[in-house]
Every structure is written in structure tokens, then in C-alpha cells.
Image (cartoon, rainbow, N blue to C red; front, side):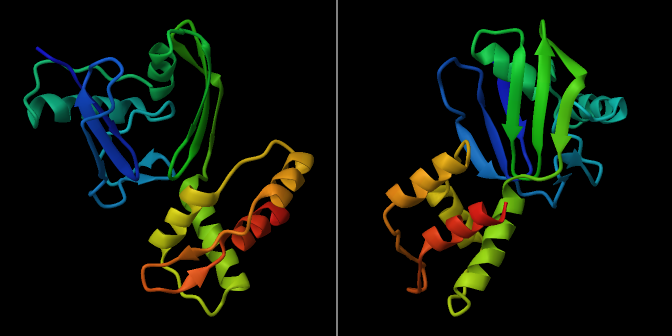
Length: 199
């Protein structure tokens, strides 16, 4: 019997057979209504096993898997623990930056240290919204959809350690020109620079 690994997030669902060094066979957008709000389970759909979910959600997930999906075996684990196992470690600190939240989790000997773990209620969608607002200020004549802002964010954004690294990156980056599907042109550099300046 082959094991199937399923990772359900607020943006993407990833699933595939548990085969080492293989990417998931299926990566699709999550199609349910907003079941994860800032990384917390909503609308009675406990499918994302995060470190701060109540026990009742985990019990409901097990019941759902056995009764509705008729599976013969089930194992749920915190994503942070599995991330460390994947690189051959049992202790460490993981940082999971998701679509709606950021989890920083301390794992000691394969167990989550809950007192040392933190969740921040912002993530990629907050950055996308912020970039959209900044774009509206710097390029009010160019209309851009949220999905296009997200693509621009994923293609052009970068992270720097400090102000010195930011200035070095700012001066070394060529001016980028991005053509939207409807033919309009925008300049992502102005959005990125504004983002860094306002932090």
C-alpha cells in the first residue's frame, strides 16, 4: 500500500505519492470557500494541521478521513516537524511563510515546542494587497487585477537583510517593464521601492 501525502493550504492543494525526491503529482488552487483564514481553519473544514489548532479540529479531521474517504490508515503531523524530517533533522526552527500567515516553530527531538512557537497573522496575500495599493498610488492610470499584482510580486520581489543591502540592490537592479495581458505597461521597480521605503 502506497502512502499519499496531502498538503492543503489557503491558496494551493498539493498531493502526491510519498516518493523521495519527487515533487507532488498534483498542485492545484484550493477550490473550497475560504476555509483557511490567516492560517486558521474556518467553516468547519479542518484539513490543515497547524500547531495551534484545537484538538477537536484534529479529531474531526480523522473522523472525516475514515468515514467520508474510507481510507485504511491515517497520520497527521505538524508541517514544521515534517519539514525537518525531510532534511534529516529532528530538531530545529522552521519558518513557514504562507498565503495568509507566517508560522515560526521550534521543534525539539521531533516535538513542537509550543511556548517557543509564534504565528503572525499576515502573509503573501497581505503583501499582494499592499503592492496593489502602492501601484494605485504610483501608477493610477494603469488598472491591474489582483492576480496580475500577485504574478508581478512573485516575479520581481526580493528580500534583503538590512538598509545597506537594500540600497545596493536598488542601485544594481535594471528598470523592469512588465506588460499586462490587456497591453498596459507598468514598472514593478516603483512598486518594490515604495514597499521597501514604507516599512
